[in-house]
Length: 120
Image (cartoon, rainbow, N blue to C red; front, side):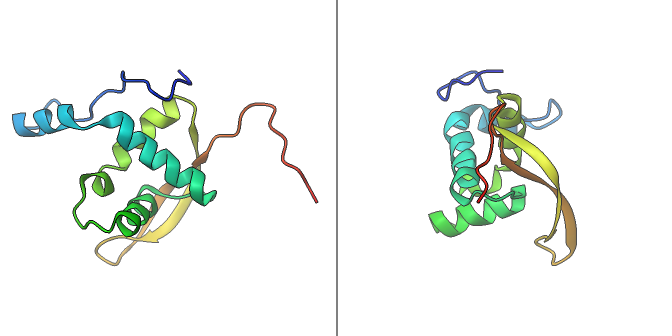
């Protein structure tokens, strides 16, 4: 686990069984930038969000339908969790693209150990 925000060692996410074009596309993605965009959304909103909610937020903020960042949110969450920047915090019910209810993992910014919230 590292706290370095410029960690270039983040791995691409493509299955071994994926076609070569998928492998090449995964290798070209600027993962560090994509991770920071996802992290920035969680930090800016301050509320637990699912991958779908983060994707919709990015879509609305970027205003670019089909933007690669908006559909590549989910693969960025595990590396951010591994780095200790975010954590899972239960599940949330959301409407998926088919209009069906889906229960997805919710994510939030991880508070540093010993961090106390101020009451009052």
